[in-house]
Image 1 (spheres, rainbow, N blue to C red):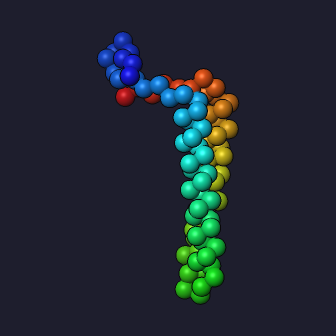
Image 2: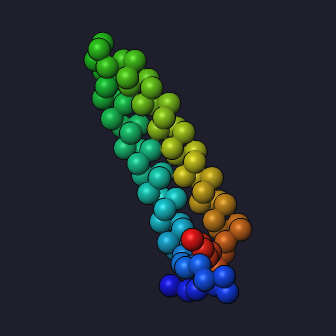
Amino acid sequence: MLVDPSGRECYYFSNQALDIIAWVDIAIGTEVGIISLFLDATIVGLPVGALMGTSSLLLIFVGSFLLWYFDKYFPNGGVLCL
């Protein structure tokens, strides 16, 4: 933990930690997509499966964007001050 001149606590996140956050988001999106495929196989689960399929695409897109963003703009990690 670091402390900036104004007395706030600051935390350093390495690039590897930021990439892990993005990959976890991609993995969760993939799992939601697989579950939605199983739900689509039932008549009752068809609307729920469609909604989950859409949200899985959104999760995968956001995770991919975060992976690109962290590697592009935070190649040495980042600092978050609270």
